[in-house]
View 1: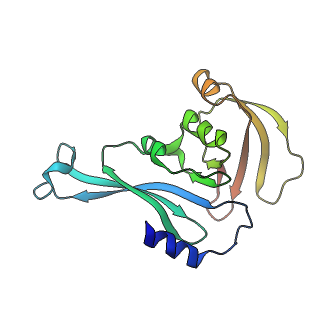
View 2: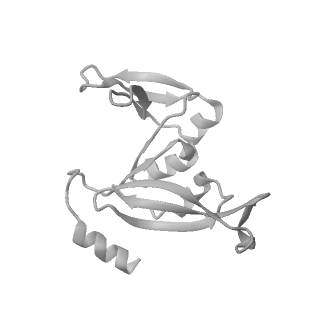
View 3: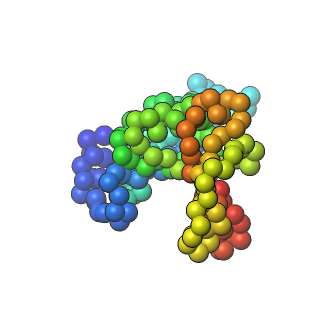
Length: 171
């Protein structure tokens, strides 16, 4: 971690012009041969480990990583992330846990996550003028029974049309 910190300081630039860092968090599974790594069983005939990585988008250097058993669900590793105040965290849909996301909000950090299709919400405010390819930018409250209790404050939801892929993304 000392070498990683040193490398990040040397590569630091201000490409986002934000007050904090911008991190992307995701994991990858590394398959292992069960004949050699018998301890890495996560399915009947498969072995492996999972590497969870907090990637500094600005410096393009990992800032934190954790190796777990391949059976560990991605969302459970959110508790191990060393969160920083004023920092932006980018997650994919696998990290849709409103209790953990609310914790990020409470410490004064920010997050972006791709919304699942079945999210229940109520719109409270619309933004009128939007940049190209932004279909909507609204303020919402979650209305699902558990999600509204786990994240009781207002959220922002942005719908974006990606011309290159020909599909819509909801954040």
